[in-house]
Amino acid sequence: MITAHPGLPEFDYIRPTTLEEASNFLAQHPGEARAFIGGTDTFVRMRDGAWQDKYLVDVKGLPGMNDLTFIPAVGLRVGAAVNMNRLIASPEVKEHYPLLAEAAHTVASYQLRTRATIAGNICNASPAGDTIGAGLVYDAKIHVHGVEGDRVEALRAFFKGPGKTVLKPGDIVTAVEYPRPPQGAQGKYIKLGRNAIGDLAIVGVTAFGYPDRTSSGYRFLVVLASVAPTPLLIDMTLLSEKPLTPELIDEAAHVAMNSVKPIDDVRGSARYRSLMVRNMTRNALTEVWKKLGR
Ligand SMILES: Cc1cc2nc3c(=O)[nH]c(=O)nc-3n(C[C@H](O)[C@H](O)[C@H](O)COP(=O)(O)OP(=O)(O)OC[C@H]3O[C@@H](n4cnc5c(N)ncnc54)[C@H](O)[C@@H]3O)c2cc1C
Image (cartoon, rainbow, N blue to C red):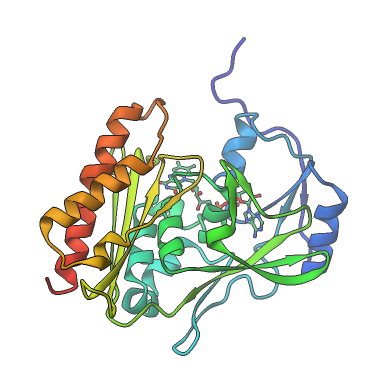
């Protein structure tokens, strides 16, 4: 008999009390122990049989994991266990990192966001992760505790492929740090899903711009989700080289479209995705340009 949704397999639930204990346990059981926080990816993959870990290591109670702090001179530090609803509701996030709040708000439903975390979204390394684009344009840093101590990884060098990151056995992400955005920066996240809530992106476009001493007076960044093995940061230098016009934005949208090699899957064909990259990039950049005071 085939069971469409089998129950969870058996596993041992491990709840370490220190980062050292957690890292050592994970390092001693490579391939059979997994750290988790919200569990919104982990338990689904376990239930579906895609992941078969013997040990699930609950790291959300570890020191510092629930801290959410904003220091004007430094930036925003989001402890790995801070759930997305708490992040979205933070006045500092709303004021200084509205793009991050906007992107987090597109993740599934309110109920799911009471569990889902930014760190989990990043560590899951899905090319469709909705909050990753904001992290990439803000140039986020990932704080990691490993068996050799603490270190910091750049988000821009974090992803190695679908589900693959630079993390090694024993590594635990403790926080995601977002530097203070450039003065006057504006952003927009546009997500195309099959329905308004609860679906992964068929295509996601993050656009970000800020005033700078360039020929156009601005610098722009674009990140594309769900159209490559990892989220793609696209070079938008052409938008700095001459005065901005709708035609130049259109050209940038074509550059974005020509940078992707999407696949066909249940959520959309490769051709549809490419065309949506063009249209959504044009719309997102135009929106950012408007916010910058076009
Ligand atoms: C119904 C449903 C709808 C969803 N919709 C969306 C959506 O619209 N957009 C979207 O982007 N995602 C969506 N997701 C996926 C998921 O909710 C997000 O990726 C979420 O942010 C994961 O966070 P988490 O804390 O639950 O991660 P977990 O499940 O706890 O962990 C995810 C992965 O990260 C690793 N990990 C977690 N924490 C750490 C850590 N501290 N150190 C090292 N590794 C760690 C785990 O080992 C695991 O591999 C959906 C999931 C479900 C079930």
